[in-house]
Amino acid sequence: MPIPKKNQLVGLDIGSHSIKLAEIDHGKRGRLLRSFGLVPVPPGAIAEGSIKDMEAVASAIKSLYKNLRVRNKNVAVSLTGYALIAKRIALEKMDETEMEKAIQEEAEKYIPYDIDEVNLDFAVLNAGGEIEEGSVQEGQAAGSKKMDVLLVAAKKDIVEEHVELIRAANLNLGVLDADVFALQNAAEISIDRPDGNYVIITIGAGELGINVVYKGMSSFSRDSSYGGNQITETIVAEYGLDYTEAERMKLGGVELDDQKKEGLGKIVSHEVSAWVKEIKRALDFVAATYPDEEINEIVLAGGSSRIEGFRPFLEQETNIPVVFLNPFKNLVFSNKLFDLEYLEYMAPQAGVAVGLALRSLGDK
Image (cartoon, rainbow, N blue to C red):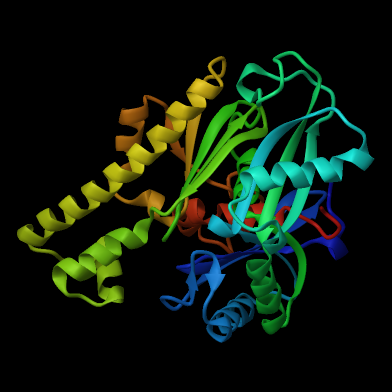
């Protein structure tokens, strides 16, 4: 169903390495890509989801808006990393008046922060099913009636930082989402089997995210502090380069002699092996928790997912088909405005921004 123009939001993915923007018109012709672009973030301006240099990041957003000539000032942004916890829990079936108290009690079990330091929200995913074996919690019996609930907690100080940032960029915050859900929204409009079982693996500059989706529902998610920055920092230490030069070396932007090629290959191989081990640990845990479910596909997202050799190595180690996310796949766009090769190259990085642009004013 088309989203009225007045309710449409611009998706703004605020990452530690770059800020991505996507603008989509939701009309009778389908979803039309109006704008897409990115701007780099100064090193250190954003770290672990926290905004360290408000002025620099706000200036980058203003520059991106100006360069892309975007007029809609209503935006959707998202949180990620340790600032945000999303947990699927099973509660005994209860009425609405009892639920808030139960959610508060359950949250204290799963959240590693003082409960007063976070904003809590929840959504009932299934209000009357039976508890599956893999979802049984202490004190419950398989087959008993339960409510399947998604619990989300966000650190108040990080939420306030993002609210302040959007205000500083002269924009209006319409929706505050989570990266993991934005990516899932983008996957649902672009992968071949959105109702199947798949895993979205996101590797950005400073974070590796894993989201296991069974039949359209997130069943497991985890964030780890792995990412492309580790490769860059090792190159800086090994070769005495500055950060920008190290990034160019990592991405193949400089000519290397045989000795440096070999050294770079060892650095990349070491880090990629650590990523794959982390992913396999998570998938082994999920397989033990949901023994009757089989993962059909791994979907890669994030700029660092394109690191040479990572995709085939992950496919080989997991024995699961691995593809790159292309959130532009089923969008309508003008060949006069967008270069197809550019969109294909940027696709793995664009998932969060596109997923956010699918949201609308008034969404929970």
